[in-house]
Length: 96
Image (tube, one colour):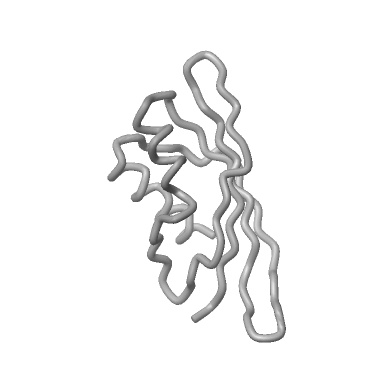
């Protein structure tokens, strides 16, 4: 999970909107052909146009995670209060 968070953090910084991890959980996942994990992350960041652009692009981003492939990533929701955005992200990683 931490490698995924590092990849998300690096991608956000490149986009000009650093994020901070507020909550994280993961559970094992498998299919007939793949083994991996489902991740639920909540990150927070100051509201900005850069953040909005990053969130729009995040599901299609190439996030390098060693020995894993980010097979799916969804921004589940954004809550905004007092200039801070709390972003719920769900991701599926599989081993390669």
